[in-house]
Image (cartoon, rainbow, N blue to C red; front, side, top):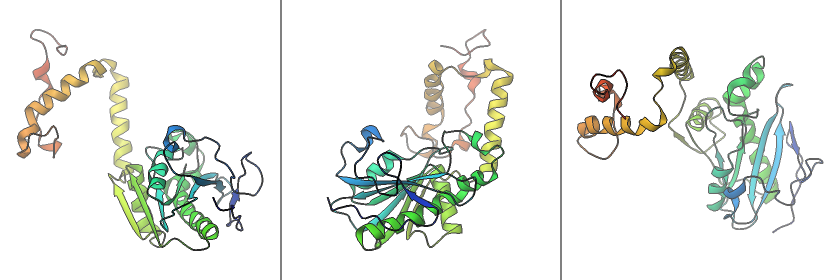
Length: 259
């Protein structure tokens, strides 16, 4: 491994040492990420945080291949409410020779409690954290390898897909290519749907389908609708075209579902 280079810190970014202090790149991996990194080649992790606002604390990790860097940068997205570094996705990118980066989007934990009373953290989650990560990561990569990445890519699904669309719309210069998988971009609709489902569940706990019976429902839906798209493959191409009636699963003379 080449001797780590400590470039000047980008604005709003601090390098973290192995003990979480100082202004130096990690000289040794501290074990975070668990099994996700067990099969990857040697690399140098650089951890830090960006503070574009007084209420921001955006964690960022950049992983730098110690050997056989393919000359490219791949940033990876989050899922749900984020709140964690996407180690598994970084490991996958590293295995392909990419320098890679991930962010927790400015908070810890996979729920929306961070947003209450913290409008700047909402902005970080919405779009700013990914842009900060892209800019800082490319600066670190260029300083470490003495050259900028030939191409920079983004890949993500669900929340990562939404992040991809936000990047393309707000910061088109950040990436040369973007993969936006299953983007959860209509947040108003998604949140309204969650509230509707949870409200119904809380109002009548009996309406919840027990885990033990979910398989029964799944099999019944597929039996009724799987072939409607012309292919029997265990998938519904368009669920809106499935007119399955759950009442068919009700036991004769009973108000409950058959076992």
